Length: 423
Image (cartoon, rainbow, N blue to C red; front, side, top):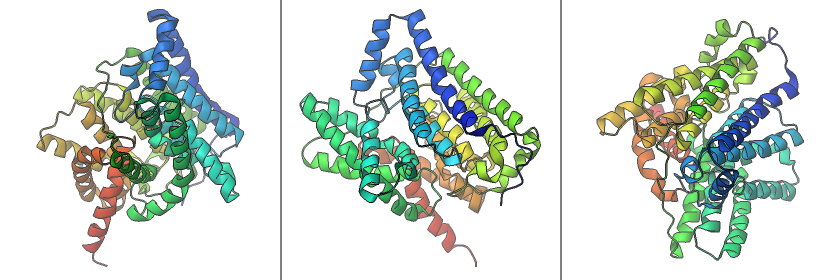
């Protein structure tokens, strides 16, 4: 049950859309500005071309491939495409859409670009025409479905085929992914029963494993890579802080009692579907997103991590899902479980691999929310063990590797926990 939202100011559909639009506008201006001040226009254009023409297999950090200016412009372009679609079909800006948009923005720092996401959208559009339904009904699923965008770049530009043939084959495969991911995702949800927030990540892991296996059977080896930037850019830190502060202030503006009512969000377990915009209102939701963003940023600074592409994707995804299932009470046990396990196994907490494992492990927040902190710790420990080994299965073509791992963990752990419960 939600509570009365009579005290909320209604900023309207355009107001909420403008909040979305402000993000890619900020990235575009900063990208162009940084490019003009610190490098030539030709260098920025070349960097953007390198991003678009690179195989973007997990992990390919665009900050390392194309540089900061080109990366920010790529993020902006991907953002504008999605905002156009949202506006064109007048999608209701609820918790799920907020989570999807922030996730797409985050992964535009590594893995997703303006070329490799489009065939998946086209495939989703074909599916709606075939089924006689509105594209509006599946857009959010397709936005998440761009998790498999790297396979399009891999087939197009890794030398598997001649360039033109490769692009044609990749567009066909991308369209096929967009066509099948909607019906598959609804069935995959049954496996983990809503305890893995990144359901499309689990679905994409299954599809990616099959596609990679097909390629390998023809002698085409698709393996994960590790291309990451070792530099944190001050301008990115400033932009993240602006975003977090902006969300907090907007939350207070919409609901001037938001801080007092914030504790109400912790009543909810987070299991799919938990839309905080409906349950506690937009004001408290934006405050929750700001709180989660602050916690993730502080953690990264404490362990000495680098704000590179994959880490930024983790930050944006955690913030986005602050509107859809995640809050401090249900993410902390899982992340602590990951951290403890990483320390026991001798991993460096400041490494990009471990930081993103910590951030994305919050996909299992519903387990901690439902079964308590002890089971949440166990879920985090299991996630840490699985996620560091599961990427090789799909060859890195699934950007939501933690969603794949989370689905496996939830699908196994939840029935075991239920078996030990006394009815």
